[in-house]
Every structure is written in structure tokens, then in C-alpha cells.
Image (cartoon, rainbow over all chains, first blue to last red; front, top):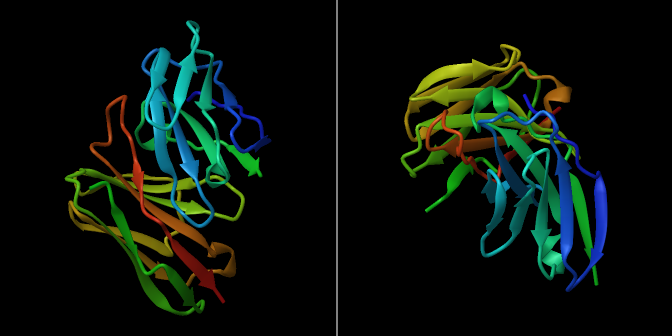
Amino acid sequence: LAKTTQPISMDSYEGQEVNITCSHNNIATNDYITWYQQFPSQGPRFIIQGYKTKVTNEVASLFIPADRKSSTLSLPRVSLSDTAVYYCLVGEGYGQNFVFGPGTRLSVLP
Amino acid sequence: DTEVTQTPKHLVMGMTNKKSLKCEQHMGHRAMYWYKQKAKKPPELMFVYSYEKLSINESVPSRFSPECPNSSLLNLHLHALQPEDSALYLCASSQDEGGVKNIQYFGAGTRLSVL
């Protein structure tokens, strides 16, 4: 089971790009990297998933280096509504391998 | 539609009460999950149902009893809870329990307070 390490908290200002890095040194060959966003008193919401290189969707980009021991979630031009906790999960996506780490609490300031 | 619906949104119960939390999804997902989340902590997995059968029980006390009546519904029966069981209870579903690209979709949760 790949353990993940993320910064506990980050601050940013509106309009800036935010990069949150997750370390996962013990990632296995079959593991995917998945990021979730959670607002207070709501369930986590899927943001993006990747295996290697770069993945981009309408809300974020995910950068994964060749060794896959880390990954970086990039949020372009954040707004106040992006204030949330961001979780990086590494695993095969089911049951016992789906373990949430402490997450990164992002605060976007005006 | 990627919606997972949980009811009730809030629940207050005494330690001798029996209550149930309900979760429903109509995405055709065959795996459903219960998580418990305390304030400022990450969600903790409690149970996993795969094809309506309990496949994972993360050593949860017997005062929590899950039930999966059909592939769209998931219940969590509560009995003789303790104040420390107060938390946000989250339900999630995914296409299947397995698969390396498994993505879970979460409901908004039930905020439970045990008095």
C-alpha cells in the first residue's frame, strides 16, 4: 500500500496558479494516482486521475515524472471557491487500497 | 448523472436509539462504500459491498450494521452508539470494486450526532 505525503496546508491568492505535490515513494506498477477535492460538510469530489506523464482536464492538470514517485496537481488561476482540502490517493482504486491521507488544506485569499 | 444521494442530511440520536442511514445511486455501479469522517480528518473506510455482497469490513464495531438490499441501495443500521461515533458518514459508489482506474463518487454525507 503506497503511503502518500502532502503539505498539510497552503495559501494562495485569487488568480494564481497553485501546485500541490504528493510524494508516493512506494508506488506499485499497477497503481494509479487520483486526486479528490472536498469542501466542508460535503463528500470528496473526483478531480483527476493519471498513471504517468501529464493529464489535463477542464479543472486541473496532473504532472507525473518518469519515476512516478511523486505527482503534482496544478490548479490554474484559482478562485475563492477553490478553498478546500485536496487528497492524493495512490492505489489500485478498490477497497483496502483506497486510503485517504491527511490531505492539503488550500486557502485562497482575495 | 453522477449523483449519490444520502438521507437524512442530519441525524441526532440517543445512545439507546436505533436509526438507519440510507444511500442510493442510479449509475449502475456495482460497488458501494461507507466511510466515517471526523472533523478535520480524512475519510476512513468502514465497509465495502461488491455486487451486493459485503467484501470488506474494516474491523468496525457491531453497533454499525450495513445492508445492501439491491445494487442501487445501501443502508447503515445504527444501534447503541456512543458519543464518539458522532461524525460525518459518507457513502460512495464505483463502477466495480476492482480495476486500476476505479473512481469513487461520494454523496454529501449524513451528519450524525450521538447524545
